[in-house]
Image (cartoon, rainbow, N blue to C red; front, side, top):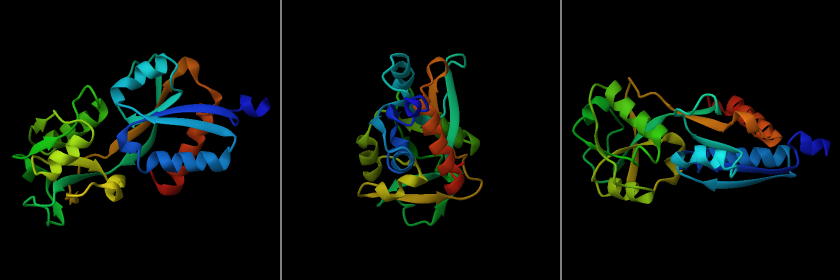
Length: 218
């Protein structure tokens, strides 16, 4: 009972978005398994737009997603990781063999990304990076999920990808470094309800803090 009260035994329901799926979440689950083997984590991938309602409906205890605005009186956020952004292009793209590209040189490109309402934090990071480089991006927001990758591979446009996804790229897509001044990294945060913080959430945040310190995540 004492272990359960400390969040070391029981269940933790975790929601996460695609940006965290291939490196951040597996690393966190592995660390939690090491520290608290009796804590069962039920993890599922979601769209960022659904996180607040999932928390309110008590269908998840904590979520991982790119930072965005939530009602400050309802939700807590804690920075978990800063993810450098790289440029994703199709293998036949004219710039695909360049070791690095200047963001300002992409003002005529079409940027593939999910619609703002599906992934608000990621959307604003992409648009903000382009505006910081001095241009308003031309956006294709019709893709969702793997279709965005397909459009990039077909050279319909380019996109931003977090560096930790480098080893998980689909066939036909290459990642390029962006020359200085580089866009701000994408902030990945943990999100949970202020009034309903389960003890297991504290253990999750402890594990995240350990990894952030060890691997220089933030």
